[in-house]
Length: 210
Ligand code: ADP
Ligand code: ZN
Image 1 (cartoon, rainbow, N blue to C red):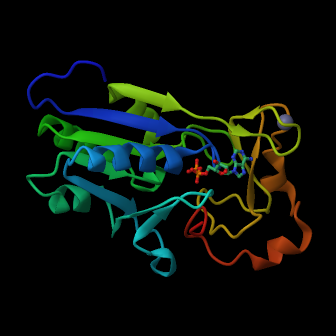
Image 2 (cartoon, rainbow, N blue to C red; image 1 turned 90 degrees about the horizontal axis):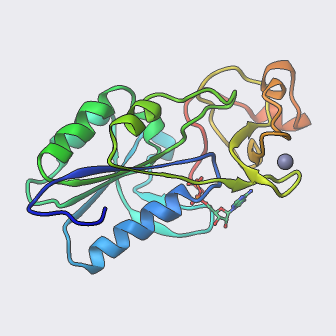
């Protein structure tokens, strides 16, 4: 955002597949806001009690403290009137309510920065991110590196057999793949990662904390 006058709020969205650097970019923007002495609040969905740790951690090890929330409405309830910047990670788990929450916060004059997966394990648009992109002032789409061929990767490849939209992720259950190397049928036809499929426990989260 270039020139912003008065206390106008807005919505920034950061999307891309897993490993594309969404959390890193979110943390970078929030740190800079903190350096500018702005009041910042950071939230992430508490998808699973086991993983409800109070930090956002990137795959490269960057960390920032955050508040786990049960849903998007809870964010609205917990944002302090004095808060200037609201950061939200793993937003694909917050459902349709996130649209209203982000809109309300921006209308209140806050800068809202939302990061999340824009497509699921089959490469389909992952709501509510596509709708959020439509109402945002600013959009950043990041790509990862395909672990097969080194090309820019737009997809999140699931390596275990499960057709549930949300699956508890352990290390090695997902990887970044480019358009050519993406094999969505791996998740549908059978375990591609051999014994790793045995560790698939219950449907709850897309990945464990990094
Ligand atoms: P996201 O939030 O999009 O999952 P993170 O910000 O957590 O991404 O992690 C990005 C970091 O992950 C990169 O800076 C890099 O260090 C690491 N990384 C691991 N595998 C890959 C990959 N296949 N492509 C790009 N970065 C990767
Ligand atoms: Zn590839």
